[in-house]
Image (cartoon, rainbow, N blue to C red; front, side, top):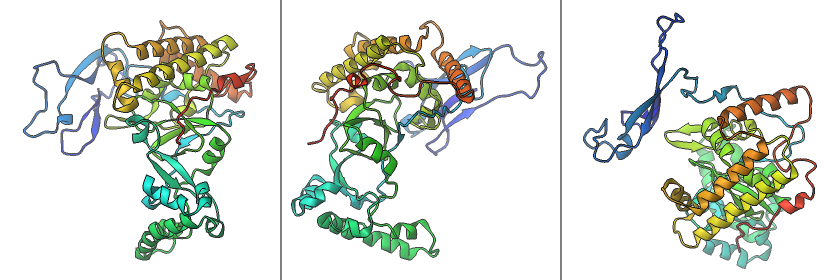
Length: 406
């Protein structure tokens, strides 16, 4: 099998290739399988599939390794398709995509935000910093724009914020009216949107309620090869390019930013070409957290997570290009303070799980997933995501470092 390669045609997609034999006859079955995968071409070596003006992303090399088994995911790693979604009765944390305004008219440039709030002080209550993936990964992390959000207010309630309402009325309503008029079916989504034109298309009210109870919460970009987690202040409205985790504690940061969650993410996320997309249903909902960490181990994970943030915050003062540029340094050889900080975090997390560094990490996580699922089915106590119950002084795990827009 070839696990992933660019399609040879013009379409910008990737494909997998399977060679199979329809038999169970051991005499006909190969003793070993070959798993082919993309690799960087050796310097000076001619790349395959290079034809004329083929785009650079269509040029590639393949290498293979032999394995006795290939699973349904075209991998020789543990088959995570058997992992169960873990339904914790005690879990209250919200993990979902950020808001989808549905129209650019809700989004304000700094000048437009200043104009809206300067003429009507009350409108400041419905104007929020608006965070997108670009700000998070390649900028300073501070939102560069704002957004008007009336939540679930009725049109009468929204009108009390005069300046903000007038802005939405002039920048959003006309286009929605025009598109609704073009629809022949009066029950279409466009006409439904006309009935609530001052509201966001996907307002994520349950998420907003959850993060409003916190002083800060965790986010990462939804499309990423490696999730980079950041705490942001609760005044921020995360956009739909952001994956939101309603955690405010350093322990949860450490677990999510560890190699355990990263490997699980790579194996379980949805993929389009070489882009990995965080999908809570397949990644977070199946990811088992440590079930019986000691207070010392929880504290160690939290401390290691804080050190990761300290090191990368210091690096951001010298490296241009944001967190993405900082994390790309991990791909380079040589000593790296961030690499060392992540290694310490990974060691603390493995200790909290009680895992062996010599055994396959995904196999150990899958075994734990099955065990937790069985205990849930038997109505036995399990440890849900977040700070373990019974941890003394959980408030000590909630520090105040985060991105706070002015």
